[in-house]
Image (cartoon, rainbow, N blue to C red; front, side, top):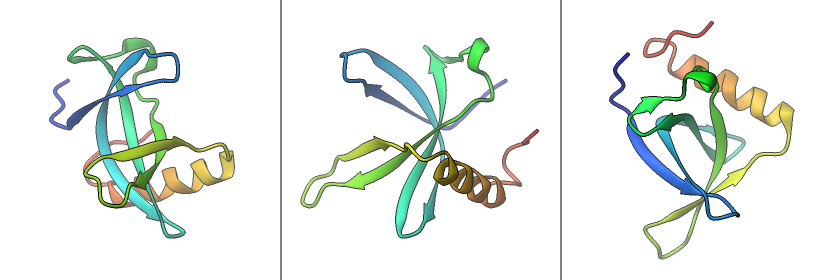
Length: 95
């Protein structure tokens, strides 16, 4: 399976780096969210294939970088994922 998404690398609070493919972004209740798929090197992690990570995008005024924030509400995650599925229904196959 070949993926052409943008790859990004995030560092967690313990200093561990993880790679993700940026599948897309969606807006919900005036907030922006990034939908990410974990990758290992250039390959999708086989144990996590199909499971996405949804993080809220926080823009930093006057900076080019942004923070990605964990979303704690399962209801919010479900709503964002539903919006993502609708927006990208022609690009990805959801099961």
